[in-house]
Amino acid sequence: MTNIPFIDLKAQYALIKDNVEAGIKRVLEHGQYIMGPEVAACEERLAQYAGSKHCLTVSSGTDALVAPLMALGIGPGDAVFLPTFTFTATAEIVVLVGAHPVYVDVHPRFFNIDVGHLAAQIAAVKKKGTHRPRAVISVDLFGLPADYAALNKLCDAEGLVLIDDAAQSYGGALNNKRVGTLAPITATSFFPAKPLGCYGDGGAIFLDDDALHAKLVSIRVHGQGRSKYEVERIGLNARFDTIQAAVILAKLDVFEHELERRQVVAQRYNEALGRAVETPEIPPGYRSSWAQYSILCDKRDAIAEALKKEGIPTAIYYPIPMHLQAAYRDYGEGEGSCPVSERLAKRILSLPMHPYLDDAAIARIAGVVRRAA
Ligand SMILES: Cc1ncc(COP(=O)(O)O)c(C=O)c1O
Image (cartoon, rainbow, N blue to C red):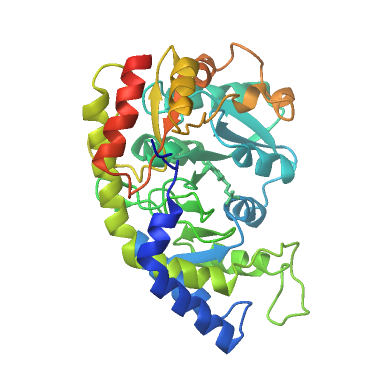
């Protein structure tokens, strides 16, 4: 029995090797390792694909989230709302700028921010009066866009900035509008395991607002002004490496094909798993980029153990919601305050998911899951 990789970057590399190596070689030859021509070329293609006016590449998905908070002047005294069922970075950047994170529970089947609970949390913060509501960070968990019709409406009515944490969802869409245009500001990640990953850290911000884009350009390089040593604001060192831009350019050539394959893999999993476990649901009009394929089941740990014995890796995203994490729980209301997320953390399991997963592997994985469930 051969082991099945959780994400098969080697299979992808075998296909795109020539393009990747030629791209990297070009960078080595021209020598513009910092902000070389591939960076602008990459931004142009990423913006074109998403349908946004601007794309600004940065050094990670985390920087793609923190830079907009800095540009908007969000900090002490401000409340930023986010789903508690997310990766650390979503909460981390709020605390890093000195703002107050307010945790929101998620939808039990789609795993994204529960807009009803969000409205209740905004009202609660306004009533308490200790922090000023400023922004909402929605997270498109596992590649599925959040409910942007409801989120944009609520944020507009409340005067809040909506930031899409699309670290997992570049390539996803809602009613034929792609991720990058669903919220006024979108942040994605090019961490290698993401649907569009480079060979190191990287990320990008998508937006239409020219003035905000200009501020972000400055923040990306230490808050620089018109010249290198003129400093206008506090910034970061958050440039995307030219070599990584060359990798993204090569991967963009196969990206749409890979997304199509991910849809097929998810569909095959759904069919093969049947009703043995709760399989992921995609609401009508939505397209997931399938960063993860995650099932729900009561026998989660037994299923993971059975798969491990067969050489099949799994992952738990996420075992502890943010409002219960040692570093972040003081901002929240403790156990029982976000019950859906707390229950998901105990029942969720992600199976291998990548564009090169073939039918035989899917059947083998699903067989083990069905028997263990
Ligand atoms: C939801 C979410 N937000 C933010 C990030 C941070 O991205 P990066 O690892 O590129 O900094 C990640 C990636 O792991 C993520 O999954």
